[in-house]
Length: 151
Ligand code: RB5
Image (cartoon, rainbow, N blue to C red):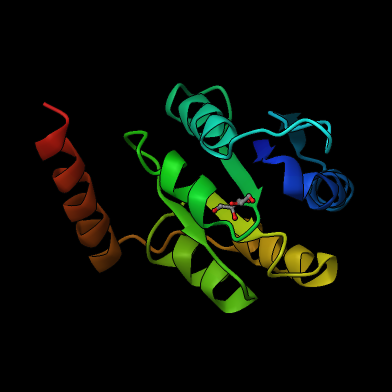
């Protein structure tokens, strides 16, 4: 499993903590798409797009995106066809967004969740499996909306 990490300048500490956690707990290969320097402002759509496009291109399997709220960076990633990025502030939603929505990116807010809660959120995201069945039909309906506007 190859996981892409992206954040803006307000979320670098949490991104680094989660990268170390995922490497240590799961042994996954982690690819850092920045930001790297808290003194250099990075607009959240830039890393959001980069991680989304890397998944769409098959260069990485899943993504973790963090900005102040997790909202802006997930909105950007969700503009990339095939991306299902979900902002989660607690573990239950992180589990369900994989089981039901087949989410390929988990997003969080560094100003919303602390490091220990963030670790529980990513653990639930990576431990969960898509259930398919009726959920596949619903995910296909999301993809159909995307296809309609991407002609
Ligand atoms: C940056 O100040 C902030 O707007 C950003 O991190 C994020 O919260 C946007 O959704």
